[in-house]
Image 1 (tube, rainbow, N blue to C red):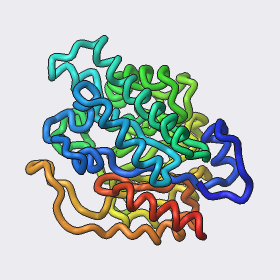
Image 2: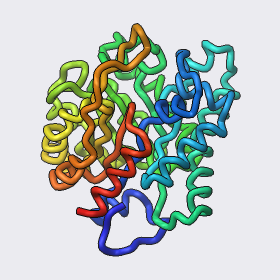
Image 3: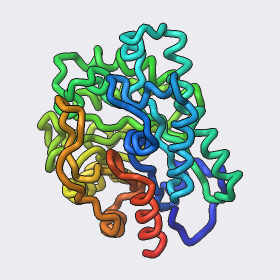
Image 4: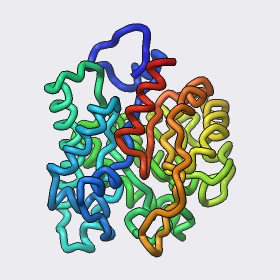
Length: 313
């Protein structure tokens, strides 16, 4: 985290942003787990390890904190009641696993402090889109054929569990469709935990094709939302998104793009080459980004470079 004036380790994230702080997010959970030798090839992706190897998730969070991340995003992106039910996991156990995702990140923050990290550390509870549960690539398309009310009913129970476990913020992330964003904004009302809203985009539109001016505008007057922006997009789409989000909402902007490689949903593998350049983060901050990190295929080394670049600016 970059700043001229020290702040207390227990400062709420919203207060840090209101004070103009720039906060470093972590990188991709899945690539960090895969680099440690874990197989994530099934439909639950990293959420499978909540049941099978929770210590691996805590280790991944710790690696990012030690690399310089101020925020750990939980492994609950693909953890849903419906997804766990497909694997025969009953609702009560699914709720335990969803809550465990927050607990593991909180434990990792405690371990990082025990290892000498003195800056504030926060936990963002991930809520991925409906398409992530389907595990068929529709998270990059949207347009599921569901109403806003149906999507709200899908998201609210998981958000209630996440909020009750004590995260600092809810990460409504990789949202491909403005209709789903509307549902998520309804679903977080009254939970007592702030949220950020980040879209997956292509150029200056959501993955479903809506103009970003309209998509970001949904959050402009949402008191629960402390930041808006983009994630799980190519780095080249970040600059335009920052400008639009800052202009339309007046809120701090959150950005954490992929490495630049592309996901092949049919092959369940990444293709192409990385175009992620950590030195770009200084320009992103100058444009209005206040939460900056990486998503898929961005690991601790890149997060360390981001933290270094921001600290040196």
